[in-house]
Image (cartoon, rainbow, N blue to C red; front, side, top):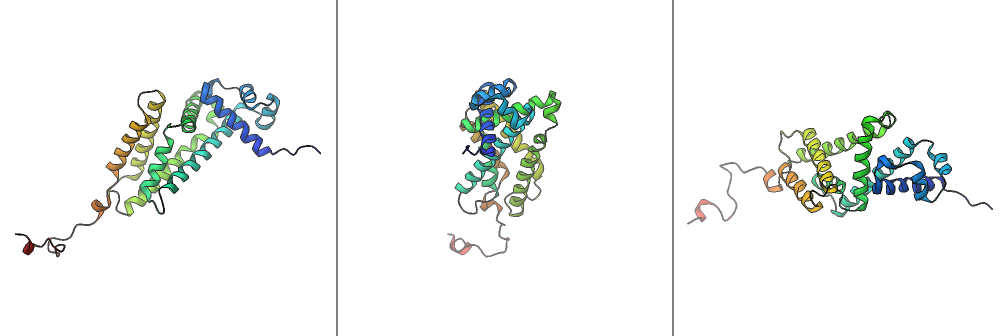
Length: 224
């Protein structure tokens, strides 16, 4: 009886091979033959599943994006129950930094794809390039939740802050890949920015009115 082929797993295997090669050589240098050799299968089989290099690249990017979402979700879960909007924003930003091989490949391949799409009409036509708006929308929504909870200034421009945070994370990620700074220093910069945007719980609490009772033990009659 012939062995049953799991086509979804075969496609995933080819996508993983693409990411491995692109992580070593850069996306611009990857061809379908390279991916076939990395996956240990024939070129014809890669062509059977994806037909064109553009389709193969898009599939690999989809896999990367899905894996990124899973890592963000795991980081949020690790923060405990009801971690709040800041923990979710921080998880997304910190996961995007190339601090390990998986996140390095994510950052390198996605950046390479965006650069190639500037001059390649076939790549630019792929729907992936609209995906970054999803991250912007997600961070904006989390910042709006934080503002409603009093964790941001009432007049905070959540869309602009989201764009700034994502742009900062992308730039810091590139500086890590280039050896300009470490992942630890980039993390410190992002947390500094988050501390600037987010209020502490005590800072967001309303101050008591001037004529309201002083907390026990601190009334004027108790001060010598």
